[in-house]
Length: 152
Image 1 (cartoon, one colour):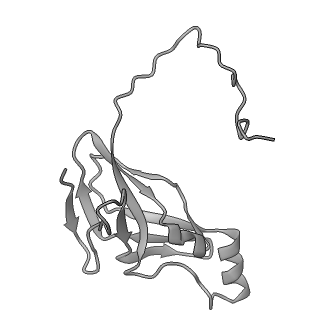
Image 2: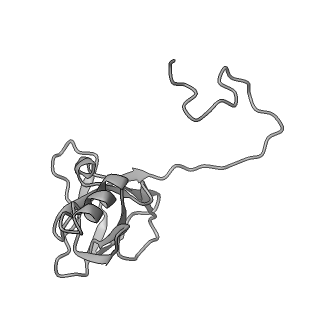
């Protein structure tokens, strides 16, 4: 499959698959769109054309655990008909926020322009139809949720 990428910023890089066995392609920060004490927003500097019937799922890289950040809408979704710049917004975790606060912003563990900031997984869009029903089948789980399957 080919996903067309249009680079629109001098520091933009196309998504990059590091190893042939990797599910995700790394996304690079081309610019900082917005930054404040609560969040930082990166632009990738590119637009895309994902084939119809497919979509992109933006997920964190494992390095995020060292950054004091979390992707604001993780996972993010890039639909096949979206033609705008891909952007990733991060919120500071309590750890990241306190680190910035107590060091007066001297220590900021956010990503820099040029860093790999997230990854995208291209996946097939399932064909789904939601139908109303008068009854559903019974299961052992029934209406239990929010960690109800955890062993005690």
